[in-house]
Image (tube, rainbow, N blue to C red):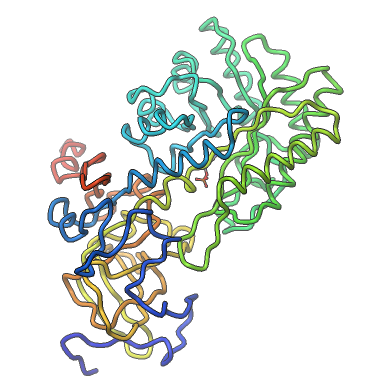
Length: 463
Ligand SMILES: *Cc1c(COP(=O)(O)O)cnc(C)c1O
């Protein structure tokens, strides 16, 4: 195989390797605003900037790989969700998507509430001053210790996930002498249109209590009987990365039906329903996510209509977007290490991170976009696979994409829409040092989670 200094890889027209890829953009230098945070653009030199700072300068100051988070974009998304749902609804940010103390402060300032699902997330929320009554505690296997801390801190709600947990939480609330506000998580039998491993509302899975067979109704019966619990409503979360509102429609209808049954049996109108999160974002130009105001309008109409039909007072609605708020706000910046063209196939571009900073491609077959950001190029598009530096052939960051054929070691490339479930799922595989998260705003860059060091690794290894 002959190789030139910057070997051109196979072009899309030349080969048809398996995979899913769209034709390259007309101009590989363009940045689709759908997948990039709002302050991202190219300056006069062709270098990409975020918050007014060049990525070349960011790379120099903070190193690569690193996540750069557009704080204005984050706040604008919070504001849009808060505004869309209005004063009669609550927006809980799902902390598992990405949580840090700075994020908690932004949420607090922007009027959002916060979902946590572990002691660690609860500790972070409280440490950053989120009022406990604005925190919801989730999880299918909360430990006694976690429940005790949550109840003791005075969290606004605990979302009960099993019959055993109903008793467990009631018992702890009794012991602490409080009446804990709770919701019951139900599985409504809806399978969201998305990858199987991230769909959560079909019945054969670990979360929630099934509506089917009257189990959820029985859970309500038991919860209403216990003095330590104040049952405020029912919760349903149907999946992730959902674009189609039809699943929410079925879910809302079934949840409202349960409220009507509860009213008929107990004479109690539960005041709240939570329809969960799972709203999709654009990872590539092919994705068309809904805007928060469209989602709010659709959900509001469904619930109002179903409640009218059942002659119920419309409950207070809450939603729990995680990905839809933080996902689009950040990109991962990598330096290109090696460029390996495989004749007749594609070009493998290796970067200085990989599955340790973005497991989603390996885990869910997730799709991402990628762009050359340290310069522009007029070279032909080449079909690439962006891979990491880990000892695993499934260590893929971007499965199929196009980059300019003159891509070379030392170039900086960026993968947009990595704000959600990348840093929060990052690992130390191969003793990788988890990258920092740097918030950028108005020409200022500030580390909000620092890069790990080898000392951090060795500190846990007690020898
Ligand atoms: C994961 C999760 C969310 C957030 O999901 P996104 O896809 O990030 O919006 C919301 N609620 C519950 C209960 C969850 O488990």
